[in-house]
Length: 278
Ligand code: MG
Image 1: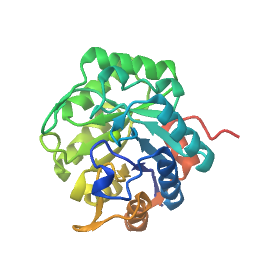
Image 2: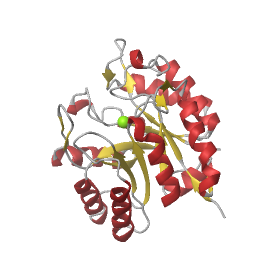
Image 3: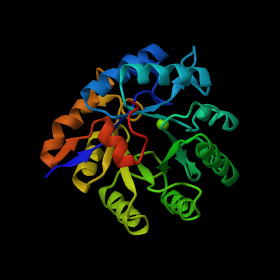
Image 4: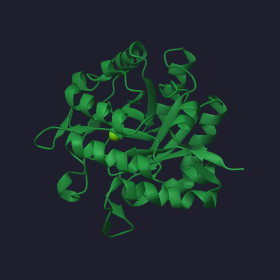
């Protein structure tokens, strides 16, 4: 028996700029192309940040719209998740694209110190994002950068503000936030299982921890995330040639952990999302 594995690809990050790895997709057409390659390689879910003409993080709903439309056209059924993440963006604009009704959007349920800034998610700001996601039929992916965010998300679910089942992404390896330590992931997963038995989860590791965390996820029964947002390299020194190459690493390792790759229809069923439109 194999267990299905949803592979998320975070195609373009807030921090790694194209100059660090020329293969990072920046324009909407590059992003659509890169997503298509990742989709063909086995990724059922894309996590999207967009960039402006100067390659800076952007909140422009038009850019999100273009990427969403292109992915819908070229990657039938792929789950589209837009980022409400904070780096380089004004708080008031971070949810400005939710009216596009993507399948999912990321949601950090707390604040945390990044190395050089506070990733600010004040209570009323989270409330507003939660309300907008509800209004536009967007399922949140809870981004857990610190343990308190897990318990806060559970409280949102218990109050009925966030629908069940929860889907949680554990973010490991950011300096000053959660380290990429397996006992920590095991603890967080056990807490989630106890508090929200129907929840689904995934984890990501940054930089050199990416593939290591992918393997932990596969072994522990979770889903997993890869892509250039979190890491630019294969191994220690070689720049990855594409998001698809990072996806393929996970796909190739999956049988070892008795995991089968979830296609878009299966991934939608697992996450409780609307089925692929006929
Ligand atoms: Mg992100």
